[in-house]
Length: 229
Image (cartoon, rainbow, N blue to C red):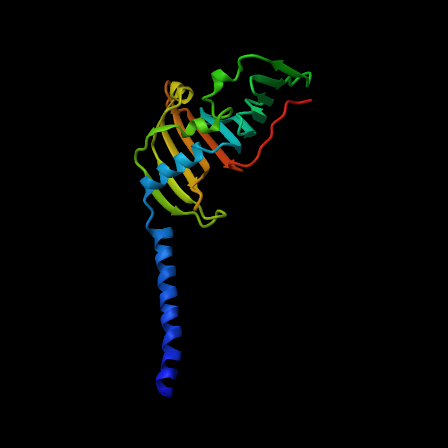
């Protein structure tokens, strides 16, 4: 009887270790190996596009004639009520903009004074520009050549990396650019898109290339944007 008891004292810890190891291995398989790229990209696009508020950083450049031309370098935030704040550089010029409800405030780069435009927003016609509305580049009608390139171990959080050649539902981009190539860094767990990088060729001059990187953060955080004083 004593021998059986001692034997179970040895066997039970071994069984528990094996069971815990099996659970860990299964979870690792689901998290690291068994990733359905199609399901992941659909979930990531839906989750990100539904965010009520967020902050972002946009960098865009043009490669033409062997030279790299900086187009924009901006930081911005969008509140849950649709208000927008934007500050940085566009085509080498300083930009600072508030849009609160139906009123837009531009800081004049020369006088440093605020120019106030009430009524219909002058930014409405630019709503498809990534600098004004970075979510607009995530309006994708069709995903082609989707590839899952694994977890990125050198990036904090080890996000999933996906690449594709999508059809983009963006009037501004489609007017000038074609042959889009996208990369997505998708956060594990939340499935928010933390970074989207795109490259595209100019429609009339295919040798000219657009490169854009948008970083998203602070999804659904409380963001209050008030008019400048």
